[in-house]
Image (cartoon, rainbow, N blue to C red; front, side, top):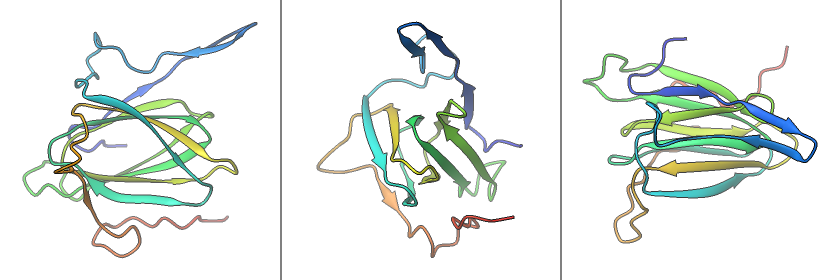
Length: 153
């Protein structure tokens, strides 16, 4: 798959032992690390779509640590070499990934597991409550060519 310009993906390694498991997500000495502003947890209930949004200033670095999601990305930057390109990733407990989402790339996800999905997001800027860096579109009615419905077959 051709990645949207600026998007990076890291396959995560789960290390189990007799006590449980460990999964290193993001290190400041890795090329994929874009910086630190804050880290937060967000959850999504089964079948729910949280989309579309973008940030003008911050980079998101997302990992699904419980459940499974279908992550959608869309490059709406006219000056980008990948303008108009969409990416899709199934990620979570069965496919541990970290996906770095650059500024101005629309993104969102749908929980595709029967249990709630838990997302960890390490962002490059702290949330500004007075002037949020959050710009939204309707998940089902926008110019983004992405269909959130589940396809059987």
